[in-house]
Structure formats: C-alpha cells, structure tokens
Image 1 (tube, rainbow over the protein chains, first blue to last red):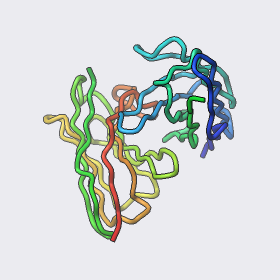
Image 2 (cartoon, rainbow over the protein chains, first blue to last red):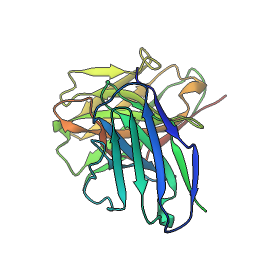
Image 3 (spheres, each protein chain N blue to C red):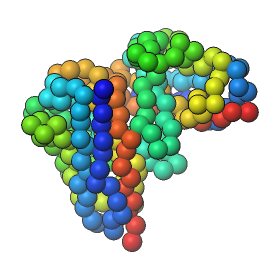
Image 4 (tube, rainbow over the protein chains, first blue to last red):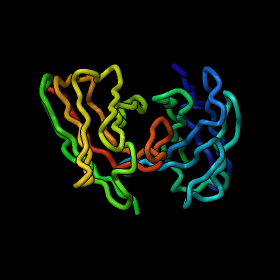
Length: 107
Length: 122
C-alpha cells in the first residue's frame, strides 16, 4: 500500500499571496496523482489530475507539479473562497490512497 | 451538469443497519463505475467500495468487507450501499463518487455528491 503524506497539516496565507501544499508518496506513483478541495456542506471538487491537468472550470491560479514521489499544489493570488481542506490522492496502486489533508486558512 | 445526491444517512445504534442511496444525473450512469468514499471525523478520506457499470464487479475495503453491500439500479440511475453490523468506527460522512474512466475503474474521482452523514451511537 502506498502511503501519502501531506504537509503542512495547516497553512495560513494572506489574501493575494501564494499557498504551496505538498504531498509525498511512499513510493513512486508516476503521474497518477489528483488533488481535491473539500469545503463543509459542499460536494468535494476535483482540482487536478495527472499531476498538473486542471478539469474544466478550475481557475488557472490552481497549478500542480511534481513527479515520482513528490508533488505540489500551488494556489496563486489566494482568495477567501479558497479556504478549505485539500487532499491529494494517488491512483497508481488500486484502490488508491489519500493523504491526510492540508487545512488552508486565510491569515 | 453532473449531479450526485446522497440520502439515507442518520443515527443508528451499534450493530444496526442503514441503506444509503445516491441519485445520479447529468451523465450516462450505466457507462461508469461508481464508488462510495467516506470522510472519517478527525481523519481523512477512505475509499469504501466500487461497482462497475454493469454491477458485475464489486470491491470493498477490508474495513467493511462482509458487512457492506454495494449495488446499483441503472434504469433509475441509483447507487446504493447497504451497511450492516455498524460500529462506531463506521461513523462518517459518506460520499457517492463517479469514476473518471468509463467502463473501467482504478482512476480518480471526477464528481462527488455533498455526502450523507452516518452517526453510530447508543
């Protein structure tokens, strides 16, 4: 089983600044990495798949990068609506596994 | 627009049962594998179960195997999760999710419902 580790657990960023969220896999997942955004009372939203591909409707200020075992989700020009918990998920090794999440707050 | 809407959650005593439902719309339901994923309080997300487009293949997490049963009604675009012998460890927000890959599984989840909460307590 691949173990996904996210850091930091909580991140506080000022509006307009950049947030950098990290996700590390215990073994290589190649390009099989997705990110999700979870807000209370709402359906979770797919933000990124294949490491760096944004689904239709996801703002360009969300970007993904990385390869192998180390991945990053970057949110530029942070907005108040970006307050959420973000999870990475590998799908290289079925059924896939999630990280423990990073809670993003506005400073 | 793809929409998934779960229902059936609630308060149940340990050892009890619940049946969750998920109504799907906005896509060809019987083209896709569907999953249940749960969000455990204070913890993270855990994949629970999947069912392929035709119901021919079903898989379960070890934590629910033998107690939960997934099913679907393609005529009505409904997904179900029958949960028996519930324990406090099963208390969570349960999400219905759509597999991104038609006809197969093992990929990411491109659409989720808002979830239905299951509380297990005496």
